[in-house]
Image 1 (cartoon, helix red, strand yellow):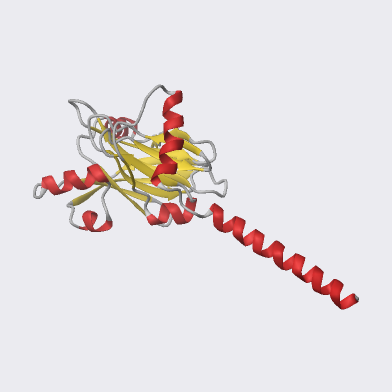
Image 2 (tube, rainbow, N blue to C red):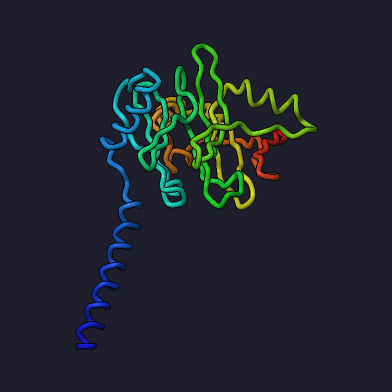
Length: 227
């Protein structure tokens, strides 16, 4: 009798463990493009906007592994969206340029969960590249702050970049590179519109423009002297 009870209790425990692992696995499963599109359409419906064309997933491996959020880009409008847990938000602006060109996960506000830091370009007539970050707990977008000793130069850099950017995550900082390709411009342009792969980036001519780093839960941008 006791052995049967112990066996039954063991079975219940084993079932609980299996269900727990199943639940964890389900949370780590990626959405299909179709599932993501439904969530994004709901977001855009609230804004009385609709997707222009086909969605493509551009989630960098490190973004998925560290945040369990997915990133999608509209192939025509080049607007970019982050999706997770049945919610979606717009990353940056794509109108008139290349949209999001680089994304890295980084915990900005020291809350124990990763946020997204990203570069994007937009502008009809005047090309502009901008850096922003999103708190993934609230899906709220913020801009980095300029250093006090460099307010004028940093604000100019942030407002009037006429080139696109690539971000590279380091241990305690994010390096900001400008793309200065004078050769194979067409290939770079196509890569940026889709979202550049590591291979694409390796073929680019990059020049360091500045650094992003966190102090007191604030993301700061500091320009470097590039000659």
